[in-house]
Amino acid sequence: MATPKGFAKFIIVLTCITAAIMELIDTSIVNVALTNISGSLGVNIEDTSWIITAYAIANVIIIPLTGFLAEYFGRKKYYIGSMILFTVASYLCAQSGSLVEIVIWRFIQGIGGGALLSTSQAILFDTFEPKDRPIAAGIFGMGIVLGPTLGPTVGGYIIDHASWPLIFIINIPIGIIATFLSIYFIEEKPGEGTRKKEIHIDYTGILLLTVGIGCLQYVLERGESEDWFNSRIIQVTSFVATTGLIGFIWHELTIPQPAVNLRVLGNTNLAFTTLFTFVIGFGLFTSVFVFPILAQRVLGFTAYETGLTLLAPTLITLVTFPVIGKLMSKGFSPIPFVVIGFLFFALYAWMNSRLSPDVGRWDFYLPLLFRAIGISMVQIPLINQAVAGLAPKDYPAGIALNNMIRQLGGAFGIALANNYISTRYAVHRYHLVENITSESEMFYERSSTIAKGIIARSGDVAGASSKALATINQVVDRQAYYLSYLDTFLLVTVFFLVMIPFAVFLKAKKQSPAEIAATAKASEDAH
Image (cartoon, rainbow, N blue to C red; front, side, top):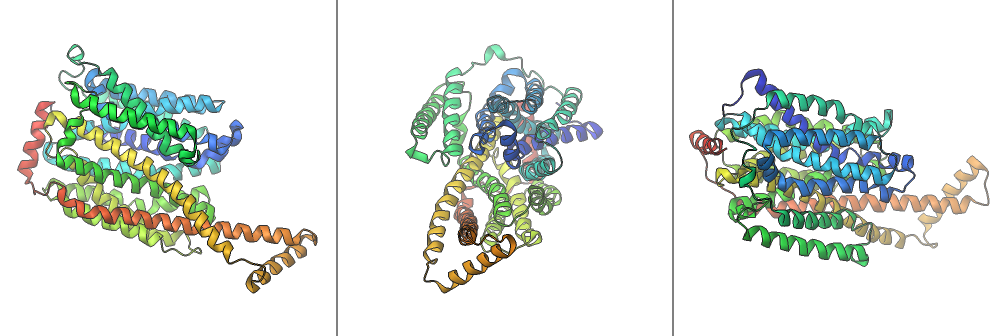
């Protein structure tokens, strides 16, 4: 199949990146709107978080199945069908009048959205000449980083200037345009979707994956709010997740036509690539989760200000990704990029762990710049490494597994961050309160000053002391949370530094442009 040229190539690239960014934006755009949605639907925040959980569960279930489903239905038909499903579900999310209704449609939206990620990547790779595919990886990696970062910015702006249904409505015109562009510009590969009779549908594998991953994602997303293993439902879902995933692995390794080809993980390079990808997902999603909470809960930023703070330095990826992609296309070894990228991300997290509580928006610019550069340097080599050393027929399986692992890393990171913040908050609060006693001269002076201020403003002499204590309690809470967020950034630093020595297990052989072209040409011929 000939690669498209000129305007057609530009349109395909634009469509694929838009679809991938749209899917990834929806993983974080709802985060800043939960308070508004909960008030509108008349439910509490804890229950409203199911809107996020449902989307994440659907994403993680469908991503590893995309290779199989694209082969069964035909990649173009599957891609367009997924885009239509995502768009229709977005409309129905906006029209939902109850929590149950919106959670159901968010799950369906996640089924359509999860398929867009891997399929967009595969179509994008086929759009470029073999020797230029690392550049395609750079363009796609840019979308992976911009998507979760744009979510809080777009969501914050909408919440500040409109109502929450617009968060879903904005997907509709984008989805419609992307669908029509896909119909007219994306070509079917020879023979795609014509082998249905030859393909065995692995119903058992799909069921085990759905149950295992679904329960695991539930445990990761809801464990903290359910008090982990003190909760009966967490105990049951943990058991089902463990049983389902072990059964899934055994089943997929013992049948000739598995839904997910786990045998590719026998390739040492891919196995370690997925490990690095897991940590990148952990860092990327955890940073997008922890930073907005720190900025809004402790520093007093609005949702929109928080999004803009994240977005500005991340725009450097518009320059760094293409440059690194070009260098990779010339056959540079991935190891230096991965090592330097992990060091930059560790530096970002360490700098955030040392912040003072009186920082402003621009104080975050340099650390977030290091984050953006670090992710840029890591994403492209890891996207290429996902298929390096695999047979061409195994490329879709390698890409799908890599994308699933990134999402799982993000889910694990958010769950770990939630739990770690709660634990460290309790420790820091205990130590702060320990120093507040009736004999403390500083405590007496501070409470007296606050009480006098309350009396001066309101004339409430009787309630001034209790209100002063409540104010001090709020200050202690804020300080305890602030310290726990710094501890979480330090934990992220440790994760990234610990991973660096494992870079020696990645494929280190420097390939020439001719070798890269030959490998990619074999992939093109096989498809």
